[in-house]
Image 1 (tube, rainbow, N blue to C red):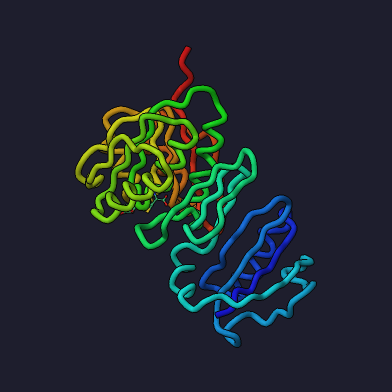
Image 2: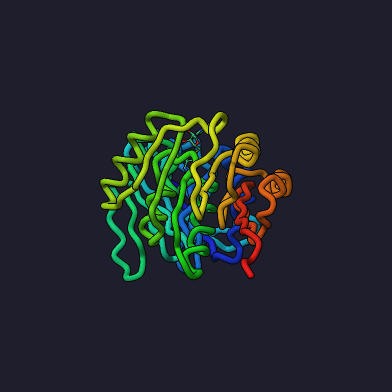
Length: 274
Ligand code: SAH
């Protein structure tokens, strides 16, 4: 198994990604660095896009191409995890077999990809984490509820960023176990991990709600929700679904919208308190 990496200057990353997705439509791994973005694809020799190592041009942008051999079980693992991701130079998410980040100011989070959905590598998760980092820069942290917690990645990141108490819910029993185990591995306390079917029951109340779900479930959550939170981060949306979902959570209003790889996430906030 070969990992073929294409490194591009950050400002031209979208252009390179668009060109690469034509060569590798099943998706690429993304690693963000300082001033650069690396995209990687995995495959057997001969299955990979034909790019020679060294300087090359992809999508009209000068990039650096490199290849390295990785063990075969990566084939399964990378689909679930891809690779470590560094978000906004602040959160480093990695599988247990990668070395810890040691840079000052960078929070190191370990998520075992063998467990449930949500390693940080998926664009929808990454977008949530970006918006959570923005929220964490504002004053006051408050309580958090992670709806559809999967591996617990968002809840764990929130706890590490100083939010609390933190609750996490999911309909899937495996997600309960994964969230508890991942929280333990990261030395954080998730105050409440609960099995809840969000189609049937209102989401637990919190100051900040994190919801990396998809449009139909987000609309249902909005409908059942008894009290609007102060802030809500919704992800897992296609661009054209974002307005409808933002409206469903009124009187919250849209504060920020971010997109990556065809996915969109929203930060919704309550009306300012006089
Ligand atoms: N929060 C993680 C995982 C998101 S995947 C991340 O951001 O990476 C969406 C999660 O929602 C899955 O774990 C899935 O089990 C859960 N989910 C799907 N339908 C649900 C429902 N009706 N009620 C509760 N959780 C649900």
